[in-house]
Image (cartoon, rainbow, N blue to C red):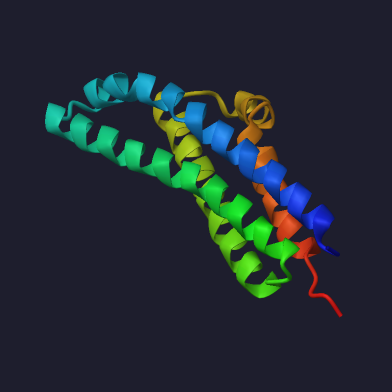
Length: 141
């Protein structure tokens, strides 16, 4: 039970990542037809990009689940396995943030407002808490 605090931080981070991925991609999807029309691409491209974004949204959601599962392993002193799984989950969350940045660039959102949007998103806090939990977990003596 020495890693109880790491578990709590990781659990909260995973929940934040799940909640962010559940709503985070919708804003990007709303701009998809505008981007496709602006680039003059055929509708098949829009379908492929929409499918790709759906897959990435699911991956991000499972990233939060992975963080929660890995954090649970901290409680049973499976620190190495837990760190690995939390690292994978946090990586998925960071990957979804990269997709969000690409959406910002494609839709023409000014870089001046990026920090405001990101720091009001639970995705940032969830990814940060997940990484903190990963590094705080220590094997029992």
